[in-house]
Image (cartoon, rainbow, N blue to C red):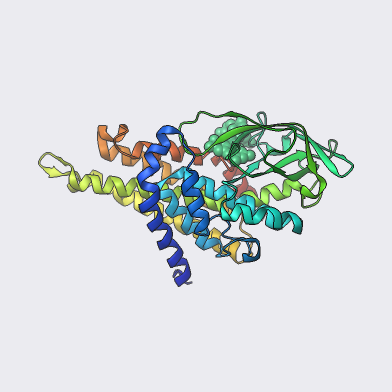
Length: 381
Ligand SMILES: Cc1cc2nc3c(=O)[nH]c(=O)nc-3n(C[C@H](O)[C@H](O)[C@H](O)COP(=O)(O)OP(=O)(O)OC[C@H]3O[C@@H](n4cnc5c(N)ncnc54)[C@H](O)[C@@H]3O)c2cc1C
């Protein structure tokens, strides 16, 4: 077993680490405070090749592989979870289009996603009444000549208001078995009948947009169908497997940011005439946090390795996402504890890390849904 990164993977990790230090960390608190989408940084990250990391070079991607992608997302998240989730979802959308789009669609949209001309891509599955139970969506798509007409509402769509393209799941066969009659469509920003609804006011990920999307007789050309008609639910589940590697990687980054900050703090802050770091209770928090995060990163990188090598990775991606998000959440809570009252104020970033990390146990499948996926994979052998 080889735990060594390749020189290229190390180079990408170090490049993103440097970018995060210089360009993301200094602006993260302000973007969070002002709920400001980081257009400028996202464009610069696209220029660095971070928006199509598993997309072939001929379509504008950097094609550096899933392990490099995971390392990059972790490094970005050490600076800001919102930058990282935008990058993760945009990469996921690019992958759906690359795997299931017709060639003309790929040529039209992938270069713009990869080079940052589109500030983001979005993935629209959830509806107001159907989140965990995603097969229960009601948005409909009806074929009319060489178009599909979409009607319905999506909820909680990351980057909804900023994205150039959205992948939308809709029911094309009303009477088929649950999950069977759903198709995936690429919908361009500005398509007739496509409106961005309300922006959610959320506790974390505040520099990333989260919107309702409304489709009212929205006209989509038939060549924007992704994959085969009525086989879209499988596509959603497959892509979410990959997305979970992204969110696991993001969580590891937020967790390390929290414990790195708190560890530095306890070395400098004194109580009872000694640095806080000299107390065993504090040392144990440090030990438990780094041990948990390193274990989480190993799970995430294992899932990334499997995906990169085209091996099954559904269970491993769910395990990685479940463990990484919950471990990082516990680490962020500990980091606040280590800072005492200061940890609870906006003078320090650890309260933002906690607000951000809580979201990761909810989207791309809640922790409960991960446990359902993992146990199903185990029980079904
Ligand atoms: C920050 C953020 C970003 C998001 N981005 C996107 C996006 O880009 N695209 C998109 O399509 N969606 C997105 N979502 C939506 C997200 O995927 C859903 O919120 C999530 O799937 C949960 O659905 P729900 O909110 O309807 O909760 P519900 O499904 O109503 O669940 C409520 C609770 O019940 C539990 N539960 C439900 N069913 C079961 C069960 N069978 N067994 C045990 N427990 C169960 C859940 O785990 C949860 O704890 C985002 C959400 C957030 C918060």
